[in-house]
Image 1 (cartoon, one colour):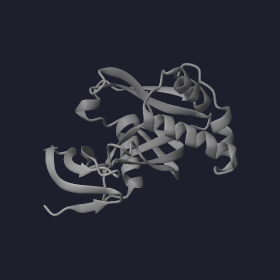
Image 2 (cartoon, one colour):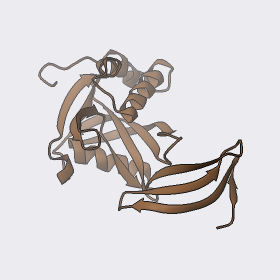
Image 3 (cartoon, rainbow, N blue to C red):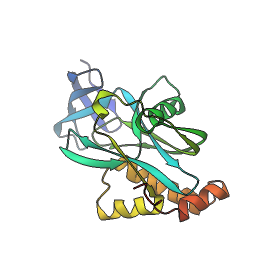
Length: 205
């Protein structure tokens, strides 16, 4: 393979080290910006990461909880999933929200678009806020059979994040983005008020 440049890095060789239907891992032999030889591994998910902040009229949001295989730990999160890169992210968000929670939303707005961990992966994450919700039945996949739901105020969810009860990075980003948008006039007034003042609904946690 002919040497090629990637910014200040020189790629001397690359190979596909591993792949499955969802991810692939590339191994690079490189020279660093200072000229020293090194290696680099890049994790490449095939799908976009999609997340949703679903806000009810009373200001509560829906969290989902499930066991995460990679960490062998239970995790409270916002509804999240993956979607093909050639599919409209909003279509994926609608599907994921329905599958995991049974919810459909009449109103949607973009909330965040960011690189998940740019030193080791090409994964891109796109988040939405959804409101004017209607509850239906979830349509979960087999890997989500243990999933549970929990309604809390968004501010309570932020407190859960600060205490370490919520550790999922995508969820932390979307909670902070929703709070910021509400405080800086980027949401409709009624929605912003719900985000900032909603509290746990009795019997729903």
